[in-house]
Length: 494
Image (cartoon, rainbow, N blue to C red; front, side):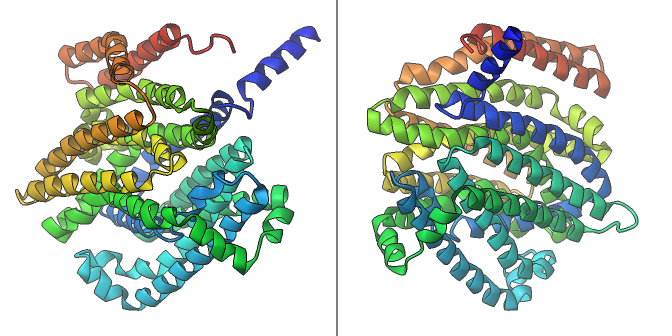
């Protein structure tokens, strides 16, 4: 009985709702399930849909990401700032009202779907443009409810919602793509919408279950207008920054159709989209799991003057997780992707080599952008985001003009990695982190990655075998993370 009580106490401390570690581990437990589901499903999905169909699906998701970045003018980002729940709940109504207006405007624009598809140089997307307003309402409603749950520190519920999102999305895509339906890109897009609908219902239900009285009592047009004025910096600066960030993350998808013929563009978008997802699945879910607790903890730390240690720790931990996968993919990505996803997707592995550093550094930077919010430095956020967008746009346009998708992605990958590094330096300095604290993690994790990288290099030298290469990736990863656990003392004092 004593041992059982001790074990329960250990688990309670490990997954506490207070501080940064407990909520992060709670969300990571769900992220681990999501990653397993996502990776297993990706190998099936790439065999059910053609690269061109995956490319159209990727383009649809990109458009949703872009309109979603502006749909509620980012007012939900202010949900953590009010001290009282009744004041924060007003922001739910404000965000929802703005979101509804955005959806109505998109409904009007969808009347010209064919013309918009031609304007985008991607006519294949035209039949699916009328679905954007509905998808926007679904996704942003879920995001607003999720932010409320973050405020209430309901991290276990959020973790469950993320699992339901991925599980329902991949189920929908697989069912739609498999016989007897054997749907084309419509099945891929439909699965995306279905998954988000399921998770949104869950998030809204959980938010209302916890706080329905507070939320409904907060409705007042006068208070909504006052909140819009009080938190106008989020609309004036966070929204443009969010738009720029969304464009920067999806600029490749938007520009490929402009530089290449439709058939080439659709296949390239499919390979690029899978490469982006395959690398981004682990690190993006980890980053999202860190982002919510970091937002809450950072807001509290800013008040007490302790923001620098938290920002430094988050930077180190995210880099710790993503450092080895970057180098491993750059060494052996094509062999691994061909074995995992099927022979056509060796090209996916080649694209992954080009963009891996950019994606991982972007995922590390993403949670730390909350530093701008808690310090109410949205103007700096906007200026920095604009600088990053201009740099990346120039690189991709110059690369695209060569007539080679590979050169375009190399130019984008290198520039993206550089500008994301600059963004990290700016945010960490703003939080009060010194240069030695920024640089030291890169040295530490490179040294710890050497044994695992040696295993991969040895496998590549032995011979041309996808199975041996993939086995070396797994073994190398085990060596790296075992060394990390030992050196970083990750389970000490739990």
